[in-house]
Image (tube, rainbow, N blue to C red; front, side, top):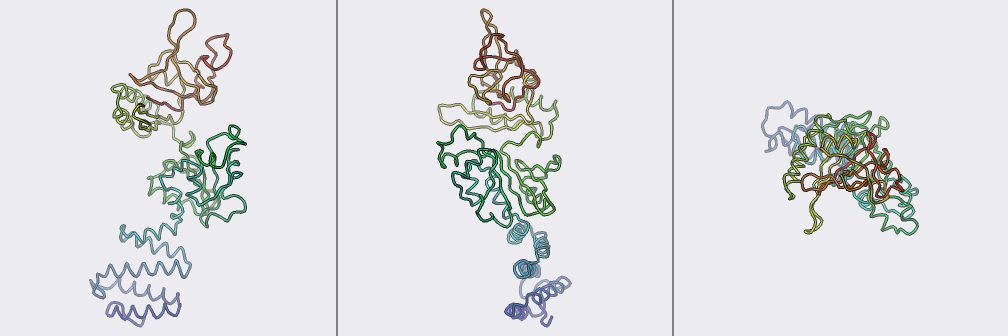
Length: 401
């Protein structure tokens, strides 16, 4: 190196400009490396009237951009920006450059808004996709590949996206419009990323903390990352995680949490009671709590409690002290089967009431039709009839309020 950056930094800057003007990128990289080596072993506290550490950071950043933008050496650029981020965690440029090199720029877009695109339109908008009515209807059959055939790839970082809608096409086809379909919610979606799982894990760990390992997948909040090859990763989002992705909670801990939750809610009638109840649940007990604001001043607030994994209805009734639980529906729909309590009445026909926590009504939703026998042997259909509950009858959610 002809010019010493320590004794004459201005002349060194001129030399860098000359090499850059000649577009000799290898020579420029070599000059920067030599200068950084000399600075590392120099005792001078300042260089060119500035703190030596600031000059070093500037040159490291220039070297990293050179590797990335001119030499196409992603590995070397990543190493440089990792060094810069370690030197100063507040270095926004280094962290952003590192994120882009690891594919975090694409992932950040996918995770935007805590990864909760509630509608098909929101998801399509976040991914920069334009959907036709035919495209949207494909999703009603289960899964739709995005972008549709004939469209350009989403980017070099995402090789494919699939979406499952939370609706049934037979309820609306053929009268549904595209606007109707785009308002539907997304049950789950998966993006296949052109990055190894180690890079994806680094990104999600920084956002959600260390993962839980489930089979060959890693669970981060509502995201599941699975390696599909040495160079690609499938990243799936679930508004409600499937049971297989949730570690089984300690039974005693969950039962104790349910009893304490019921007692907390029963102690009052205002929204603050629900907030306190949600805050009282210990982690890893298999209960996911969401306090919901009342839709209008005339309505009461509600608390949604997801049981993950689902809990056998008789076991739940025993823990919460619900006598004579039965399965019953007032509407013929898979998700409309609930736990009711049979009470004594005049004559042979019992009466039914919903369970409660104090003055709060509780809707305990069963996973489909009860498996037990009907209480009335002469029953004529599911609507209004009551059925015994068995250990196969699972409760997945409680709604209080």
